[in-house]
Image (cartoon, rainbow, N blue to C red; front, side, top):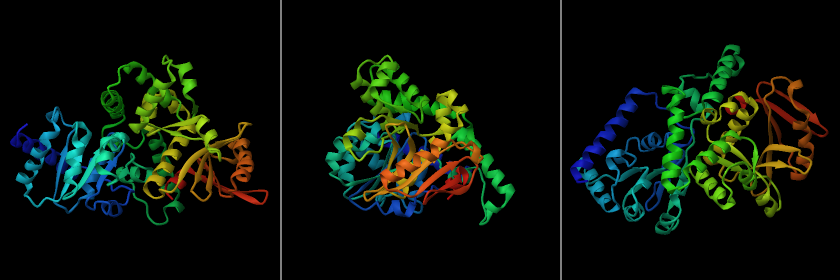
Length: 428
């Protein structure tokens, strides 16, 4: 492409995004923009990563609000086949459009250009650069070599429940939780969020968007990106994993269940699926790293709406949907606010289990159980009994049960267990 053609693409992309900001309700994210912007110090590159359609482009624009910057999205059919040596022409197009004093650049879905790493590595020494990508492997391989640690990555997730409320126009005053009508409104919104999930476009276009998002992740971000030959097997594996959200899995069990007989292939495909942020694998807690590595892992999906769209039966299992919401929220709190957190689940030889364990380098900070219960009588005894063993083993007295709509604090010997509704926990 020549410079004039590139200028036309850049100008139309900017016009589209500016139109979006004028017409739509733009939701400010929970992620602290000022803190993230401070990472944009030369010669660092800021990488904003996350699942496709989670709002990375909009967040990049919000991040550079008030600044003079060049923006280009390489996931544009007009830019298919663009070569690394043409990236200097992109730079020239920016300068001709906005002037030579442009100091910030956003390269959206930059991995679509083969060999882009050298260009960014050279440019970062004089300009402030944001790159975005839908695969966590963006920062491996050649880029890691070229940048030698000179990059900071930030992972963005679909809307949290707080962000979902903002997107739907629901605002809460200071004492909202004392209002019966406000609480009823929040609980209704949570039921919708648990079913539809937090992808920004779903609120405007409906759940039909989810089929397209899932297809693009599978076909473009996984099969196309990794040039997978056995595409049907990868599709089957992805669907199986999402259908088993909240359950334990091992590669040997998957080999017995699916038509993929090679454990190495399953492991490789599983890595591709997690790299695309479609699923996450939660390790079992153990003080022995070998046991932790060998133990089954629990599968969670990036978004409830996506999980419901792919695995129709999951929509009827409120307990697993709740557990998935809690996991993604814990992951969000780790990535946005508590980078020292480590997340696990716990299970002993008798099958007693703790859904989530929050640990730091020093100690275990909290034990969390999740149950779809609205009354004390609906809470399974095993959920409470598991605390006694786990709290002793991990030396943790901070025990929490997240319920659907039951709140209390009870005694367990010389310790206490707090019960809190999901809606209240999500808005804390």
